[in-house]
Image (cartoon, rainbow, N blue to C red; front, side, top):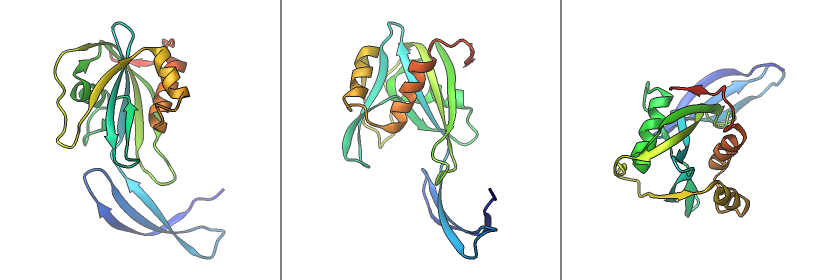
Length: 186
């Protein structure tokens, strides 16, 4: 397998959430030049947060991409040069008003390497307690809801939770929650 060669690069669009670039590339085994499109975005965090009494914290909000209300674990963009653990704590507190007793990195995964350059840091926060009101961005309108693990499994099976990144986060949580070798800040 051989690497593509980038011949030129052009920024097509830029916002505070992402930038779209066009790459013109050649391959050693092909004669033609091809266009590829890449979304540049900051890294994301996703937090499966569990209260002291074992309930999983969800945010419910209207998402314009599908024009649906979604059930999600707290998530957000990392700020420039922000530590992933700090971003996880910040987003959890801002979106829900909860603070973790313990925070573990479950996994760092590529968002979508075919068209995106960023990564998602999946965290597990346990012993979460409510310490403040939400501190939402102007474009956010979020309800906080708590569910038992059994309720969450049923919500996934019934398609109530249908956001692929959230389902992945919950699968990581359910498969890794008993491991002791996860990275911890404690």
